[in-house]
Amino acid sequence: MKSRFAEHKGIRRPRRWILGMVAVVTGAVLALSGCTTSPSAVDSAAATAPSLTWGLAISPRSLFAPSNYSQDGSSVMSLIQSQLLNISNEGKLEPGVASKWEAVDSTTYEYTIGKAVFSNGDKVTAEDVAFSLNLQLDPKVASQEGGLFSNVDSVTYDGDVVTVKLKKADSLWQFLPASITGYVYQKKSVEASLATYGTPETLPIGSGPYMVSEFVPDSQVVLVRNPKFIGDKPKYDKITFKIIPDPQTMLLAMNTGEIDGTFSVPSASIGLWKAAADVSTFSGLRWTGLTLDMTQAPYSDIHVRKALYYATDRKAIVDGLLGGLGTVSTTANDPSIFAAALDKGVVDSSYEQIETFPYDVSKAKQELAMSSVPDGFDLTLNVPQSAVLEAICQAVKADWAKIGVNVTLNLMQGGPRFQIIMDHAPNLGVQIISNTPDAPDSAQMAWQYYSSEQAVQNGNNSSNLRDPKVDALITEAQASTDSEKGAQMVLEAQVAAAKFVPSIPIAWGQYPVAVKKGGNAKGVGTWYAQQIWTDLISLK
Image 1: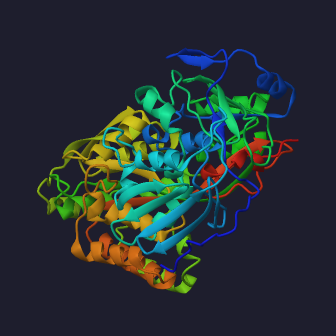
Image 2: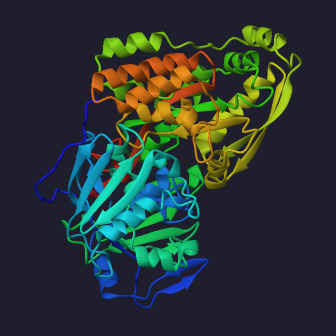
Image 3: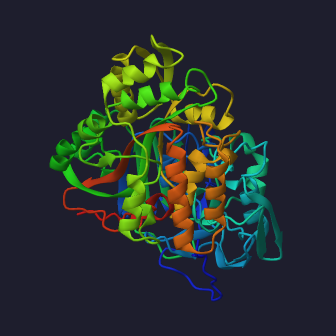
């Protein structure tokens, strides 16, 4: 794809120069059940300065990205940890810890480290940056984002320059330093407490605008302004994340003023939320669907895969459960991700070629009758902690029962469920997926869900689709320096992959955000969880 990896020679500071975070708090009381700090000058200042209270439906597993690859987690960690680069809502790369950067050639990237400072006063060094990136490659760390670094050959540093060498040209790499994989940690603090880093026992140290003053799992995370942060002063001096898993309790908290806002707005009850708060939406490029392990019986039988697809009333799920915040999907990529590279007519024409199997119980029964399990079968579907995903899986269970497929839902925490996919042991069965791209690169989602490179340990391809033609198209797209040609290869890969029926696409969705009446979330966009998004929240 035409390189969007701009070379920045001048040292400049953007509006949201991400540089700080901390966890060394004088008088901190550390315990596995929680961590709070004694009052300090910073806390006192925060108590009288503007504050923001935000609702989270899921408690962060940790505040260390390698052990918490999640949207909710990154919305907290992005305020604490600075990134190597930053990204705008338009997908433009901007300086972060790196003051300048360049692509030396198609597989070599250099980053010059600027004047970032950790919240304990130590300078952020190129050694810290190289260490942080190498966390994704270290098998002892077993990073949940490690699959995104499968094309990285080495990360080294010399002086204040960090050099990344790739195994092959990859259009995605340019954006990864501005994503959750680009967080910068202090080497000595991580090495001293790797096993507990990011937990209440060992709070993380960063160089972003906030630092952690309290972390009580399943209760709250409190951030206060980092006085060592060398960028623009953040909008709020204190941010409190209240953990409220129950949707009704979250709505009550919004009504009573206990929280100022949340991203956790259940789409099915969005009407009630609009009465309680100012609700807006933005593109999330989120794909939700079911993957089917093509290497495991009975899903290895294409008649079974087609039967399950026909038996899934995707339109009813979208209309009934997503509250107008979604459309029926046909592949992993939301079509809008191609807008910058291709005309809409070209994209629409390609999407019309994707083979689909609209809801039809009689056709589902016919396909099953031609399969190795004509009388149906039983299966267990692991469901990560999410009210929407649970509701979708309940609907799927009811749909599939009509053709003799009996589904048992196994509710579990999102982290352990995701780890099952990352471990990639045999017999992945059916997996419910809800994922967004980490960057404005159309090749990423195709690579993650259709490439054989991802049908391995630490890979996302839980259907285990392996096809030389699909692989070749994705590889060509990743290596292309022409954005139009690269996007066209991705379109062709999607069409080719769909013929194998590796998944049952359900929805492309938007993100809702609710702010108390009189406030707004103008400017919050697709890449909010990689930004200082709290600066974009205004209260009355």
